[in-house]
Image (cartoon, rainbow, N blue to C red; front, side, top):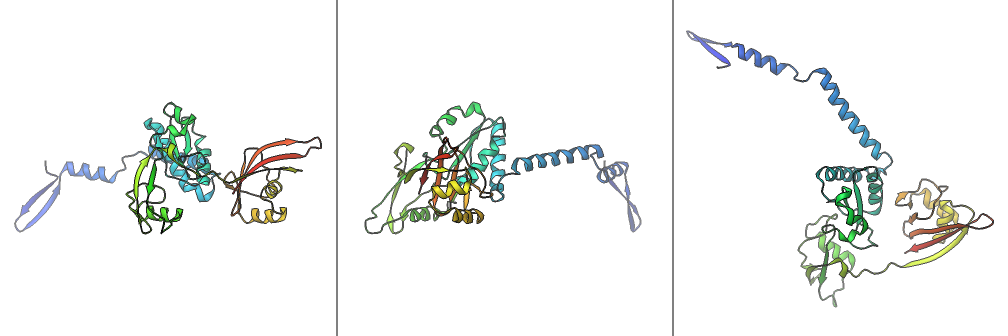
Length: 292
């Protein structure tokens, strides 16, 4: 049945709308969703947005975008019953992401950078049933991190870490991913091949063990002792945003730290609080390790 029927009257023509066309026009002008359903859909979207904002409300503003993407990726992995991996992220992003992922009862997350001291890590995420071995030993993750052995004669053209990173990025690989056909570093031709992570030769970090007796566990007191500077100077660094506790910006100098916390200071290295005991005079004996 045609929607429009043409009627010819001499040199003039007109179109008559058939009953079917009338129904189609009415359908096109009407809203297929009743108002009650529209309100219900809007409520679901609003509640979903509100829930996501609640999950991310305490995350550092500079990390919120990355953590939101990681959270969405983890939720997809849980639905699909698979293990998925993020990009390589800096310690602050990894710390915030792991804290958010702890809220998901059906997701287990493990950070891994290829060796225990790695700072930039990927996060492996999935349901506990498929993450059992990885949770106990991240090196068992088959696709998380790969190592490359790069060989060349650098006797007459010494290369630094920055040169190797620049050569990799020069192949078109983004900073978050490493892996490409690398043929030259500076002016030196190189050969690359994949090797097991167990063959990585990682220099041990320089570390210094120290202890201090403090009247309180205030951040400025403990950090000034660990980084060996005056308490006033440490207070200025904290106010300037140069000090982080567990990779998050320190809110104020009076915040208290505890055993297991990691304090990092721009240009000064990292301080790990190993143990805290008290004396008979109720002083705090703080055992620390400083990495430089």
